Image (cartoon, rainbow, N blue to C red; front, side):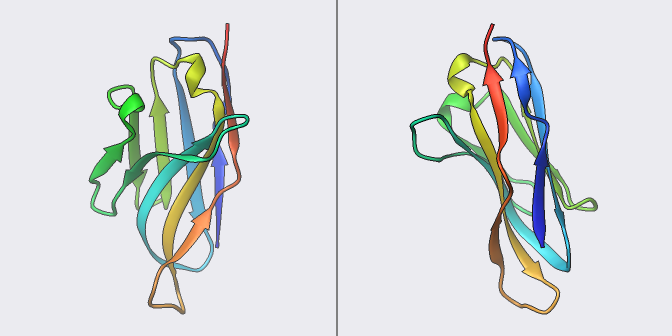
Length: 120
Protein backbone atom coordinates (compact mmCIF):
# COMPACT_ATOMS: atom_id res chain seq x y z
CA UNK A 1 0.00 0.00 0.00
CA UNK A 2 1.26 3.47 -0.82
CA UNK A 3 0.04 7.04 -1.02
CA UNK A 4 1.08 9.17 -3.98
CA UNK A 5 0.66 12.92 -3.62
CA UNK A 6 0.75 15.41 -6.47
CA UNK A 7 -0.26 18.93 -7.43
CA UNK A 8 2.25 21.13 -5.67
CA UNK A 9 3.93 24.07 -7.33
CA UNK A 10 4.59 27.79 -7.34
CA UNK A 11 1.61 30.11 -7.06
CA UNK A 12 1.21 33.83 -6.46
CA UNK A 13 -0.44 35.14 -3.29
CA UNK A 14 -4.20 35.03 -3.68
CA UNK A 15 -3.99 32.17 -6.13
CA UNK A 16 -5.33 28.63 -5.96
CA UNK A 17 -3.91 25.14 -6.12
CA UNK A 18 -5.39 21.67 -5.74
CA UNK A 19 -3.46 18.77 -4.27
CA UNK A 20 -4.33 15.12 -4.86
CA UNK A 21 -3.30 11.98 -3.03
CA UNK A 22 -4.15 8.52 -4.33
CA UNK A 23 -3.89 5.32 -2.33
CA UNK A 24 -2.99 2.12 -4.14
CA UNK A 25 -2.28 -1.48 -3.30
CA UNK A 26 -4.15 -4.24 -1.50
CA UNK A 27 -6.79 -2.08 0.16
CA UNK A 28 -9.89 -3.31 1.94
CA UNK A 29 -11.08 0.09 3.10
CA UNK A 30 -9.86 3.56 4.00
CA UNK A 31 -10.94 5.31 7.15
CA UNK A 32 -9.87 8.88 7.87
CA UNK A 33 -7.73 10.78 5.38
CA UNK A 34 -5.99 14.07 5.86
CA UNK A 35 -3.36 16.61 4.97
CA UNK A 36 -0.45 17.91 7.01
CA UNK A 37 2.22 20.44 6.15
CA UNK A 38 5.73 21.28 7.21
CA UNK A 39 7.23 24.70 6.59
CA UNK A 40 11.02 25.17 6.53
CA UNK A 41 12.40 25.08 10.05
CA UNK A 42 9.05 24.20 11.60
CA UNK A 43 7.34 21.06 12.83
CA UNK A 44 4.79 19.21 10.77
CA UNK A 45 1.26 20.40 11.51
CA UNK A 46 -2.22 19.14 10.79
CA UNK A 47 -4.16 21.05 8.12
CA UNK A 48 -7.40 19.20 7.43
CA UNK A 49 -9.00 15.79 7.71
CA UNK A 50 -12.05 13.98 6.38
CA UNK A 51 -13.83 10.85 7.54
CA UNK A 52 -14.96 8.03 5.31
CA UNK A 53 -18.45 9.51 5.53
CA UNK A 54 -17.30 12.92 4.37
CA UNK A 55 -17.21 14.89 7.61
CA UNK A 56 -14.32 17.38 7.54
CA UNK A 57 -12.30 19.48 9.95
CA UNK A 58 -9.81 22.26 9.36
CA UNK A 59 -6.97 24.06 11.07
CA UNK A 60 -8.20 27.50 12.05
CA UNK A 61 -5.94 29.47 9.73
CA UNK A 62 -7.11 27.62 6.61
CA UNK A 63 -10.82 27.38 7.42
CA UNK A 64 -12.82 29.14 4.74
CA UNK A 65 -9.90 29.01 2.27
CA UNK A 66 -9.14 25.29 1.94
CA UNK A 67 -11.55 22.49 1.07
CA UNK A 68 -10.80 18.83 1.67
CA UNK A 69 -12.72 16.19 -0.25
CA UNK A 70 -12.38 12.55 -1.19
CA UNK A 71 -13.43 10.16 -3.92
CA UNK A 72 -13.89 6.79 -2.25
CA UNK A 73 -14.19 4.98 -5.57
CA UNK A 74 -10.75 6.26 -6.53
CA UNK A 75 -9.21 6.00 -3.04
CA UNK A 76 -8.18 9.63 -3.46
CA UNK A 77 -8.22 12.66 -1.19
CA UNK A 78 -8.00 16.23 -2.46
CA UNK A 79 -7.10 19.56 -0.93
CA UNK A 80 -8.37 22.59 -2.80
CA UNK A 81 -6.43 25.61 -1.59
CA UNK A 82 -7.80 29.08 -2.34
CA UNK A 83 -6.64 32.59 -1.48
CA UNK A 84 -3.18 31.27 -0.78
CA UNK A 85 -0.85 33.27 1.44
CA UNK A 86 2.96 33.18 1.72
CA UNK A 87 2.45 31.59 5.14
CA UNK A 88 0.96 28.55 3.39
CA UNK A 89 4.34 27.76 1.85
CA UNK A 90 5.30 24.26 2.96
CA UNK A 91 5.71 20.65 1.97
CA UNK A 92 2.24 19.10 2.12
CA UNK A 93 1.84 15.46 3.18
CA UNK A 94 -1.22 13.26 2.87
CA UNK A 95 -2.11 10.76 5.54
CA UNK A 96 -4.59 7.90 5.65
CA UNK A 97 -5.73 5.07 7.89
CA UNK A 98 -5.96 2.09 5.58
CA UNK A 99 -7.22 -1.40 6.26
CA UNK A 100 -5.28 -3.79 4.07
CA UNK A 101 -6.97 -6.82 2.49
CA UNK A 102 -5.49 -9.29 4.98
CA UNK A 103 -5.93 -7.08 8.02
CA UNK A 104 -8.81 -6.09 10.26
CA UNK A 105 -7.29 -3.02 11.88
CA UNK A 106 -6.15 0.13 10.04
CA UNK A 107 -2.53 1.07 9.50
CA UNK A 108 -1.41 4.68 9.26
CA UNK A 109 0.27 5.63 5.98
CA UNK A 110 2.00 8.79 4.81
CA UNK A 111 2.51 10.02 1.29
CA UNK A 112 5.63 11.77 0.12
CA UNK A 113 5.58 15.54 0.42
CA UNK A 114 4.53 17.81 -2.38
CA UNK A 115 5.95 21.32 -2.21
CA UNK A 116 3.70 24.37 -2.32
CA UNK A 117 5.40 27.74 -2.67
CA UNK A 118 3.35 30.92 -2.44
CA UNK A 119 5.39 33.84 -3.68
CA UNK A 120 5.20 36.78 -6.04
